[in-house]
Image (cartoon, rainbow, N blue to C red):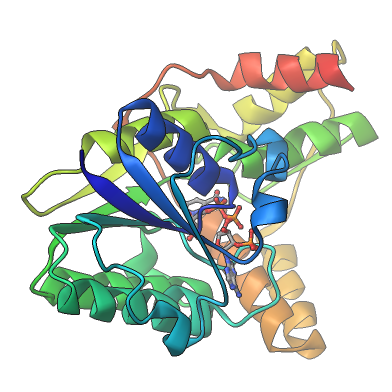
Length: 288
Ligand SMILES: NC(=O)c1ccc[n+]([C@@H]2O[C@H](COP(=O)([O-])OP(=O)(O)OC[C@H]3O[C@@H](n4cnc5c(N)ncnc54)[C@H](OP(=O)(O)O)[C@@H]3O)[C@@H](O)[C@H]2O)c1
């Protein structure tokens, strides 16, 4: 049986990766900050890891001492490790921590390393995307067989549209007709696990529906049985938001740049999966 180290195992995607690997008979070693937290339900309705992990490693993934030997005895590494809502610097986590896991994987002769990147990371200017692109570039030049998966936005992120619709008005980005293909964590986890193999590759992937932001807003209002009310943000306002955020500090500026760039370009990729955003919104609307 193949054994797999999962980094970022407690996240929205990481939890689905662990469950999908376990379901397919992989032996999972999970690197987590807290097993207690991992065994509770996770962010955005993601599941508990109780019963799915064969071996726990608890510690600080940014500490090289914790990472040394982390890959010993596993045949593959899957990393969904990255800063989203957390406070740390993306450079320390997305780049340096992943780099230190890769170093250990090389020393321990693992067979493959799958990394969950972000679509269009290499052309982004935020520290989040530069950190991710830098790690993907190093991985692609390493001696380890690698898979780099570049997803579009996750269902967890577009949930914000439903929250805005609940408040009465959805604010659309300057070009509301840009195409995106949000993907559910379960579908993306399945896509990633299917790519675990002994040859290298890189894939842009999204969910089954290609949608404009305007359409996503309509789906959110439909789930709440409300008439759509939207405002389209003027392009200058997005620039202004980045300017204001940059006055508040490095991290707010970086997050604002990340979202501003993300909202102004298509993100579709290979269409994959079975979870439809309309059903997801309907389920969330029904639950509250
Ligand atoms: N959300 C999106 O729409 C989207 C789209 C494309 C790609 N991605 C990328 O996909 C990956 C997974 O995303 P996600 O939404 O599943 O993110 P998430 O829920 O925030 O999970 C991130 C994982 O990284 C860990 N992590 C972050 N900072 C850490 C730190 N300082 N020390 C230790 N662990 C840390 C988290 O641990 P804790 O649980 O302990 O915080 C968690 O396990 C990320 O790299 C993200 O950039 C996301």
